[in-house]
Length: 196
Image (cartoon, rainbow, N blue to C red; front, top):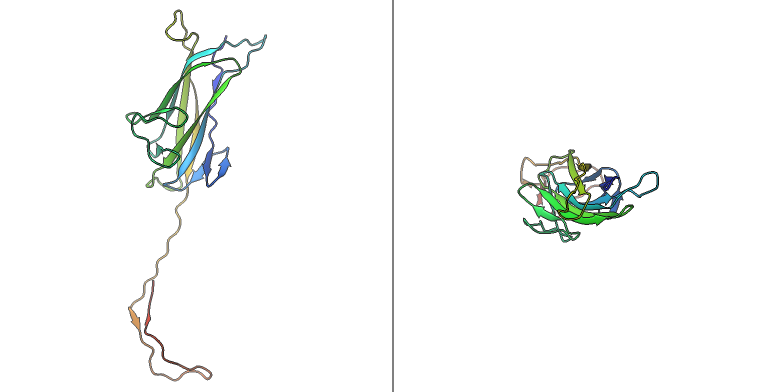
């Protein structure tokens, strides 16, 4: 029997209300949303599946991503997300334990993380998640631990926007007394200042 058929983190990132199932692109300093989905395969006579117990979910964030609240405040060490994942700054992980998943059952966790304002432009950052289950609840014996399953999601930082500056070689420009082409006149003009 296979208690835990798979941990299928399906990442999606959202910015300004848009959603993408592929790698998302956000600007440095902006938030992104991820969804972790942990599933236990459906059971059938040909492929029986037992209930998965004590599923340890560990979501590891790269240094460029910090979990934040819906309002955008960074989580402190030991804080939990709205979906119940606990943040540990020492190893940059969001963790929880799912008590059990019956065959065919699924549970999801939402993660909101902010890309660092100094994150390298046009780069890709990988968010890895793992899940491991046991065959019996608690510390029952003879309990079996099943192989850890994993998945990842990527987030791309936006390319740098070009910048442009303009400077003048002097602060003040004075209109000189000169002959103007036919049809042009000069009335009283305020002093003009060059602007960048």
